[in-house]
Image (tube, rainbow, N blue to C red; front, top):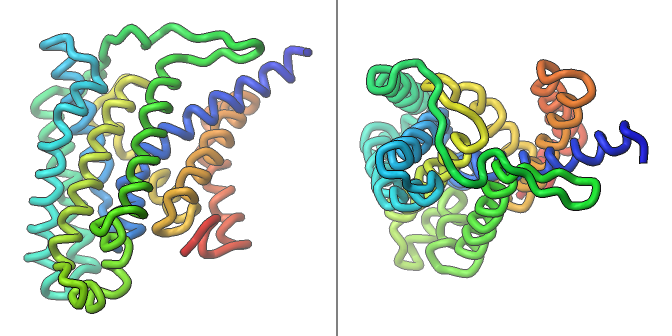
Length: 291
């Protein structure tokens, strides 16, 4: 096989692995925006908080960054529930969720970023783990472990959440809460409590994605801005509320960015990714697997 074909195959494989990371980053927005209709533009800030928690656990105590994020999951779940409760009392209960609600999350994004700058400075931070650096060679493919490990963990998380949403009462209530709250009340379910649980899950998954982020690349407090557009694009492209669609969209954008970066340069990658979004929505406005 010639060099170009080999380069193409490896770019596709790298794109699939990158897509797994994008799915992990976007799954929280798929819950908050896709299922709850909450435009949480502060989502990248919680991802960065997860990255710095992984950094602290790794640098101070030598804990694996993914394990550090898993240990911190209950704290982030509780944080998500508190943030939703504030949002509910201040905006949703008053039916004032549009511009002021958006400003609330923008304020959270700004405050978190400033707090991280004050606490950690603007220097890039990294973590150490046995799988950061080495690659596995399978035939023609080189699989970087720093991408493969987050991909596998992200796959488990997405499958677990899909099973939770489709097989449990609370999961089905989460899927229904934005569509028919009266029906939920008739089933003795409190819509506010269901949304609080779901938003807690959204923030918890964001913190875990933060551990993946610092494994894949060095981080600094403002780097989350790079992902605001991508995560909402993936959620919309896959179809609001569709986890399988979100995964397909994440893989599509990952492959598109990898191929573009390989053959045309990394500066073109975001443009191609969003071009795919625009074309898909022009053909299918509801997204790939829209509800």
